Amino acid sequence: MAYTPITMLQIRRMLQLLEKGESKRSISRILHSGKHTIDKYVDRIDQSGQELSELLKLSDAQLLVLMYPLRNDLKPDPRLQFLLDKLPLYQKELTRTGVTKLLLWKEYRQEVPDGYGYSQFCERLADYQKKNEATMHFNHHPGDFIQIDFAGEKISYIDPATGEFIDCPVLVCILPYSGYTYAEALPSGAQEYMFAAMGRCMDYFEGVPKNALSDNMKQYVTKSNRYEPVFSTVSEQWAVHYNINLTAARVRKPKDKPSVENIVKVAYMRIYAPMRNESYYNLVSLNKRILECCGIHNRTLMQKCSYSRYDRFIKNEKPTLRPLPSEPFIIKHTAKAKVQKNYHVILGEDWHQYSVPFQYIAKQVVIVYDCEEVEIYIGQLRIASHKRNYSKHGYTTLKEHMPESHQRYNETKEWDSDYFLEQAKEIGESSFEIFTHILASRAFPEQTYIACIGLLRMAMRYGEERFENACTRALHASQVSYRMIENILANNMDKLQDDQLILLSSIPDHENIRGPQSYH
Image 1 (cartoon, helix red, strand yellow):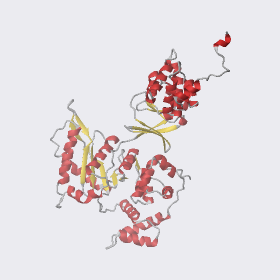
Image 2: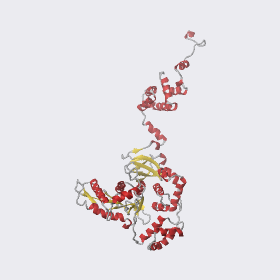
Image 3: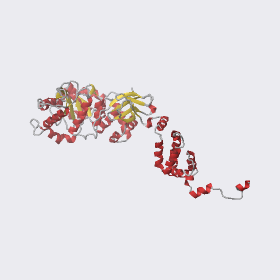
């Protein structure tokens, strides 16, 4: 069976994961793609001879040359069944004194030298333990995860115009190692509000952890699956922007993210309770107060500890966070379209038309757009890019997208006497006078535009200095024309001195010349 090419977004995600040292099997799981498919892409990356950081800087078109086309066939991994058969024994062995997962893994590798790495071994074992309802302690590491969830109860502010209570969902985020917490009330749970809030959460943490864990909320996951959940396109865009791994808890398994489940309960005590008798009249003031409550909570000493969540975050976790991206995250939307005969596509949201190269007429394309930019793709290849224009029923057209005949016609719409005189004035005074004479030589100036275009092209061909000299020579004539300037330049007469011109134009006296007296 042929391998299905992965998207350019997945390729960039794969490069990021490789840069972090993730295994190919882990990448296969994260990208929902076959291991052998990933192998082929990794081979292409290795064959390129470039560093991963350099590949991430390449444009989509450059990456396309390296990555496509790729095809492969998926093959079952015999190691998996062997490990699955051993997992019941390993779980039993872990109950014995002194037995650790590292020891079991070493014994496993003695049996299977080319078996799974330690992280994959632990992951398979953990999955098996969870499946069998085994209770285990989560050992969190600094900067490993951010856990995300919505509080079950909403919080409200009062609309000053109507006096109506406006209910707002509350997004709660926590770094489970330190317990450092962020919360924000949103106008709604829609994707654009949720991911914008998650971006502000990263700003609050002043860094980015390695992984983001949430439950199967529809904004985050489009298809739930215990092993390979399908994340929404916006989630993937957000993950690439922040260079963060996406993970999802199993359906109806809150123990997979116990930290955020617990902090939601704490939020009711530390945020909702202090604010229960307070009134707010807009979302800004409401969130300002929520953030104050978060600050108090984060700086409160933890139970039976001499330090707060903030202290633990600053000392141990913040140094492990990766830097924030230089630009804020902007959600990109997609739409399908067909290139019309006028080599434009319509963005239906604004009913505005954007040009593409005319060679793509009648092709199906994908429009990727945000509030600033509009990009147009065929497959993985970007064929056009424009600044977004919100004027309805308008056109945004690039000259290079037009057929040559259309370009020439379009140029004529810009011609007028002022245009030619401005061009001539930049060449010189004599050129300006010549153009003035030629434009005035016809009753309708439009009839001289072709000659004026010819003169400008002549100036480009011979150079502005020679053209200006030729115009100076031509001004001595009683009448000037395009052909006169052309003859002067073609015969190099613009290079002659005045006395040479007189010599050429005069006829010397000699006996063979008859005067008027010869005819009396």
